[in-house]
Amino acid sequence: MSEYPNAYGNPDVQLYQEPERTSIMAILSLVMSLLGCCVFITAPIGVLLGIFGLIGTSKSNGRVGGKGLAIGGIIVGVLAMAIWAGIVFGFGGMMNVAIKQFGSTTESILSDIQSGDYDAARANMAGPGSLTSDEDLAAFNAAYTADLGSYVSMPSGFGEMINGYMALGPLMQPYQNRGGYVPMPAQFDSGWVLVLYVMDPSGQGPVGANGMPLPEGLILIGSDGTEYSIPLGSGSNTWPRTGSGSDAGDSDADSDEDSATPGDESAEEEGTEEPDEGP
Image 1 (cartoon, rainbow, N blue to C red):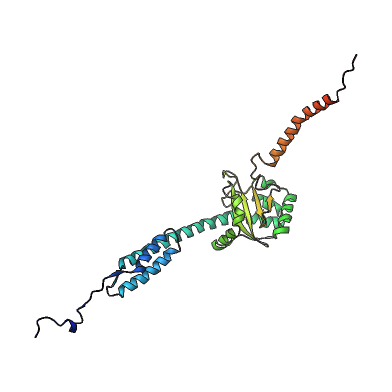
Image 2: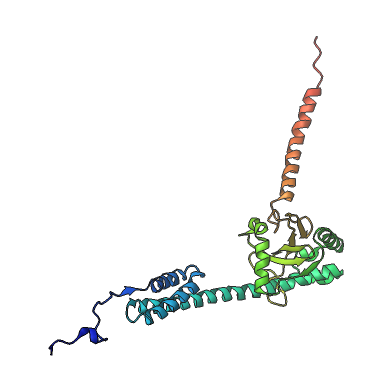
């Protein structure tokens, strides 16, 4: 009888030890989850890869390693998604507050104008918008209604608000970084319309019942870029009024004409002066 154990008869003895390899899914899980801190979409992918990698390493009977990488990928991915969720919902909450505050005042003004209650519309505005006459408010209503249709509503939620901003993106570019302008999407009969809530850039103007600054004017911008504003004639180039613009240009032109008039008259007088007769 042999003193050496029969290796072939003992199933617990492995003749060839297969080297352990690291799970590719576990590696990708950690990489994608780390990228998820910068790009949201990769974070859930990293979590899924981590779960698959964890299952694969558990069923490999030690042939496949990387269990720690898979667990790390799952943890980092979940944390990245939590951070992104906080950012999105936090931003969405702030935008909802802004729309409710500024949007409620805008809705009141437009609804009052469309119903012909001009006194109520002026009560929700600061000067010079509050000084707009009934005739000008009626002309403003007639102008935008003819092209845009009637005002319908402000966005009812964050998703609808994002859809409105995406539809109006090209129209918003000329008005970005302008102090005192609050761009908002609004639904009209013709579709999305950009509404500019124009207020005192310093924030020192009168406030409404909701505690937000009252608008000095409103500018509606259609899909073709046409502006409809309160007060009339106060477009984006001259609003809010700063002493420059068309009025200043007119006054400069008038002053140039006035300064040129004496010279012209003197020139004419010199030109019409009769020559001295000779002896």
